[in-house]
Image (tube, rainbow over all chains, first blue to last red; front, side, top):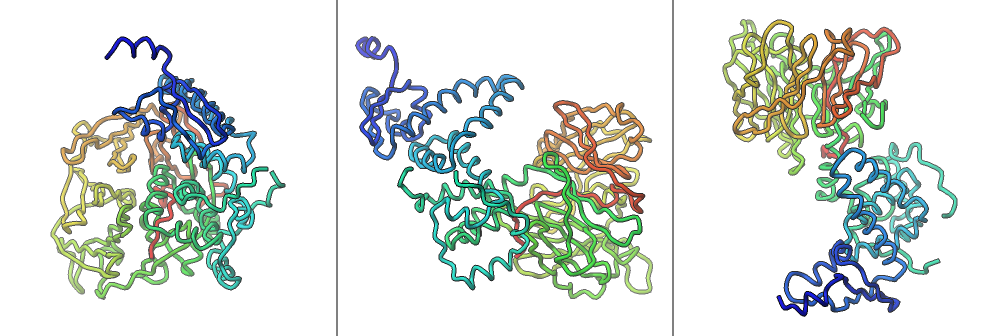
Length: 176
Length: 361
């Protein structure tokens, strides 16, 4: 190791450039929570001071993902220590996505999936699952932007076959 | 509003979301579009879903009205509480004989020798072919198989049903012949083999069959207890020993359960409940993982039976109640109690249960 490297890399940061040409400088430990970033720099060779382009991610999403990872990195080791830490982490998971619209969550999923941020993806996927759980099929189609490719007869037959699954479905919520 | 529509969501993301849905919502999602139908029906997805679903151990028990005419099933979940359901989709009056990884094996009450395997959550069922043996009802002593086991392999998604018992040829006394019939879901056929053995089983021991490591396990009773094992790969019976420290003295009773994929024995004395887990299956190494004082449920102790557990809690049944014990907080809680004076105690027909989408087709 040369001494030049030691003095230049005092604060280890990684630079990411988003789709809207914004450059973010993150602390290395936060950046390494992104599987894609970790793989990009790898163990061999790509210099850490090189800027990594992330053309599929908008600055708006990246800001949020960085926010999650920073908070999560702080809480996770505490949760391994004792019950109080575990409780705090559970509360964090419960509250973190509360204010976001489902559409916003979907945008975050695409970004987190591209960046391979597994912990955040787990939370996002679970949040969507909780929100579509017990909703109507029409609501789910609208949310995911899916057009059904069943004929009316096919759909009717399926609904009859799984009639038990259609009992007690919630009313569709107001637009969110 | 972001104009980007999410008609394109990578399949893996859709799978991850769907794998977190409760079963009803999951099956409804099959009607969203044909791609989703394929995704949810995919063998890999089912395995993924089930591997997560089996971590939750629930208690299934038959409850009957005081008239004894109507009975239904209730399922007790540590977190979600009690929910009621029925097996009316079988269009037959049945008794639950065994439960494994989300499937139930039931015998018909009016038609002796008729068995079903069903998933009570998805309402799929399979009527098992009658074994060609006329004397499926020649089991001794009461024409019904002594042991009924259900083995549902999560990875291969194939299952076996085992009916075993002492056999008595017509007009003769029983002769120690132990007949074992095994149904294979892949071939849809029964096969049989015969051994000579002399084991006794109490009612609870018959009900508490555990499927781990590709084999079915039952506790034997009598003077020297051990675990009777049916190896389904080699069609062989063998025996495993209980923890050395388990004293078979008076006032000590023990039960065979599963604990997160391992064999477990729970011992109940007047004042203590001890939980043993078989940590090393091949070396038969047992470990005492918990000793629970029964002081706060003192009055219930003589009639309490452990039915199922995870590393975090134990679900038990008495004559009229279902209780849960949380191992971390050391707290006992009543989950359910019978309103009327039932004919049979709850523990009599209680089974460990898991809610999965295991298919019996």
